[in-house]
Length: 277
Length: 143
Image 1 (cartoon, each protein chain N blue to C red):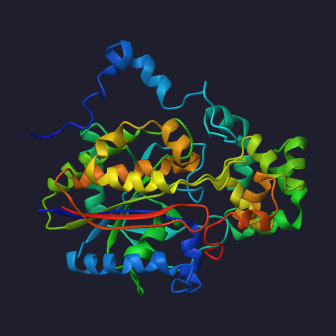
Image 2: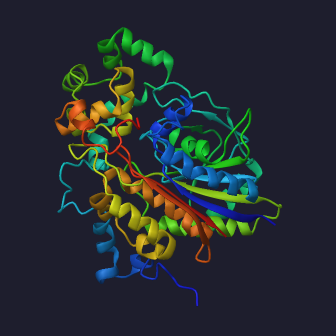
Image 3: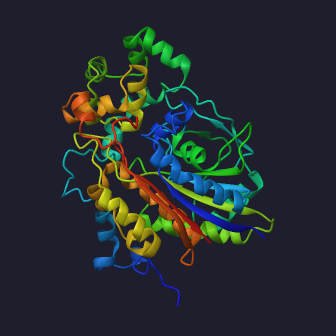
């Protein structure tokens, strides 16, 4: 039987991808971030997940407002690297697990989550930065992936509570899968930041630390937060944090928190939290 | 006993009152209390900025970026931008583009093709120089 073995909440700031590609992760400006992921990678190497479900949002590499799904799930054997406007990053394509993806899609839809099923998805920083931080690659990546895209860009967005419930439905799908598979789930984005308007650069470290604390001990209070409250307290683009609740809903109440880190150097609070089921 | 975090949630479509449909519609974005200096990208902005955003989104290949760089005006005409929208692009008026409905993530593609990075766009929106903006950061080398 399949088993959910790990949950990770992590920011997906694009400048990390640039630093990674330029070999700057050990520079003093990036070391407080990259050091925090060393024990996470060791921990994941012990847990040996076969598949990672990565909950992320596209930033205009593949999805446009002509048709904009609220939730979209990848169901392919392979995913290409997208071009966000800067050219393609020099990374190998991602390996999918189409059989598991289609099981997940079937389970979610019959469980009343009407996701969009995608047989082609070009992946970008929202997805790739967490992969760089958690799953170091050679010619291939150490895990197969299921990209799960969430609309956190064009309001109306799914509510925070809806994201948590999606996570619970994902857990039911994993638990019901007959193959012997070890699954990790990664919720990405945030933490506090604002990129649009004269409020550009707004951050709130106190909010971010409280969010990490609540995510561990009282996720229900976060599920009841409105988008307005999230945007007021943490910046308009911080609504991405609702994607962490998908992960939290999947690992469930009994999950044990393992790692935690916070670093806010420039315009975004970069958080990290992990859970073991 | 298993806690239900979301006990107040759904079923509201068939109820009314404080937990009901009307409050659910109103509560996620409170338009009566706009967030200062912030553009919440909703349906109204997405409709207003549709041409600009489609133009920006088109800049996600080497070929289209080369075509834009070769003749900006012809490229923008091909994307159906209005004269006012073209002027905002020509003058690299990023705050003006945001006000005209550009989504920040789409706008970053115009930034990339014109050599204007995120922090430049941000400083301009704040009405600051890049150096003034960087001086407000915790670790300004982490770029």
